[in-house]
Image 1 (cartoon, rainbow, N blue to C red):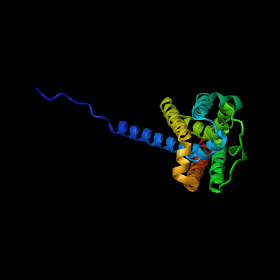
Image 2: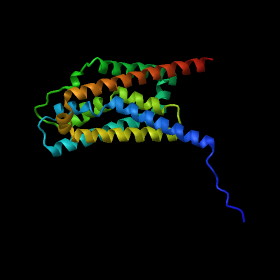
Image 3: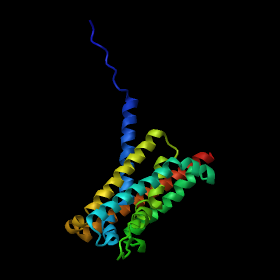
Image 4: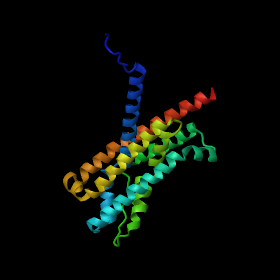
Length: 222
């Protein structure tokens, strides 16, 4: 009797797995850079003020869930939005890349948005919606990044994008809940340095999107 034949994965299957893994890491890194859970910590503290722990947890949970829902809607309805407004993939990648690049550039320049440093003497749970969920967590840069990763691709890649974004949303939730301890241990200077590193990564992602858009435009024209 001969040994039973065992089917071995083909080289193409290995390559596909590596490609999906590479895509997942890229999406996760991109979302982490654009949402920057660590740099959002002092923003969260400035908004919630002296709220009790229960209120802080409620605000952090609500803001991250709303942010995920917004990006989920844009990812799933991206094709419909493109068709309705006549948006092409190359135009979206180029315009989105410029937008993402300037988000990173402003972070490198240490420019602070006034909406991220509000003084809130009376805590209102609505801050979970605005400005926390919109525009801090799911602003234009985040939406553009999500749609860039999920546009003109298959269902598997879309699921990977949503899982990557869900992980970063959960990280933001955890960092919000640990906000006071993180600031106490890391200090504002360390958080500022991390913000600059994230800004550089975001600017590179934006440049990559622009290059991809230009390549696609030339391919469609030829």
